[in-house]
Amino acid sequence: MYQLILFDVDGVLLSEKRCFDSTTLSVWEMLYSDQALGLQGESFVSSPREKEIERIRKLVLDDDGILSWLKAQGMNSNWDMVSLLFGYQLQRLLYLLHQKQPSFVEEILNRPLNRRALMRIGEMVRKTRIQFQPDFPGIIQALRSQKGELDLSECLDRLAREWSGIETESFSHGKSLWQLGREIYQEWYLGAEQFEKVEKKKALYREKAGFLDQEIPLAEPSAIKEMLSGLSRHGISLGIGTGRPDVETEVPLVALDLYPSFDPNRIVTASDVQRAEEVYPEQAPLGKPRPFTYIKGFLGRQVSDAKCVAARLPVPEGEKILIVGDSVADLLAAQEMGCDFAATLTGPSGAEARSKFEELHADYILDNVTDLLALIDSILAKESDSKEVNGEKKGSKKLVKRREKIEKDSTG
Image 1 (cartoon, rainbow, N blue to C red):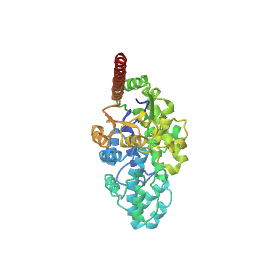
Image 2 (tube, one colour):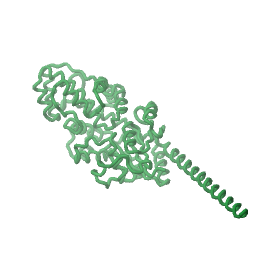
Image 3 (cartoon, rainbow, N blue to C red):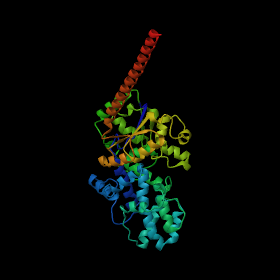
Image 4 (spheres, rainbow, N blue to C red):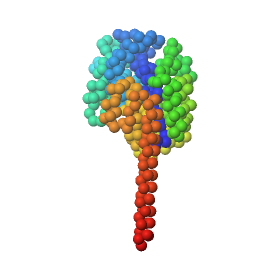
């Protein structure tokens, strides 16, 4: 029986809608804000209406086709997604610039791709009158064309090297462009006021209200809480392993009265991952599908990052751990740890994800996270029946032996 269950948050407990809204708005800002590339052809506003958010998301994610593909490749981090989606458009733009201003592009690729660099690129694009339109759907074909194993964190550097001949890591995880994308995402999701409190930085756009108080639970909060309480009554420890940072995990779950259901020593977030990456940059990225998040949830937050990074896999007694997630990244992390995995069909692909989870041999597939308690109850019932049957068999064997001994003594 399971002694520990670790839950992802997005796509399991909470809808991912606002996270992906923030992702696409971040990409849009980096393309069209005059404080970034400032491309022509579209407008940027820092307080868009819902209809405009939906339009931008439909364009950037190609009606969510790009999102489904990236999730199927194991991408789990919205910060990584911002970096990849924008980075692909940027390297396409730099390719065009390289044909007219090669020395400028070589200089850019040999320096940090920060906000100032983006503004300089935008100025050069206007000066050279390059006509550029983002090709959002093209990213899938571009990444598929890469030879060898598909490592999304390295693909853009490889593409840029192919056309420029320059060895660059400008598009890699954790570099200046990635950090800028993360910062812009945080400002969109948290809103200006909360961003300044959490990030200890001045917000660029004070008009951003944020989405932190607009989270959507994937079932009635009371039903989720009842499910979690039932698991606890079975003596199962409950934890979290999420790609959300600390505040984005705590605030909505506290508001829904779900946060107290989890062992605080087993709540691991993207903030933990980022701190570990800062100490062990050679290990980055450590986010899912790497199992670090769930390993730390298993060992406990009090255990050093060094031990979590160096943990031998599969983990001891992994069969007593169940990981609950909505993505391929969660499943791959669970399998590397030697743990069982329960997939929920409440992620962005919905019921269509079932075939993928079946193909990858998920141990269980649930329509909704609230179905988990019934699953655990049925497992416990089967174990109880098995023990009773085994007990009866043992008792029967002892009785037969006792009778044989009596018969032998009486005839002796």
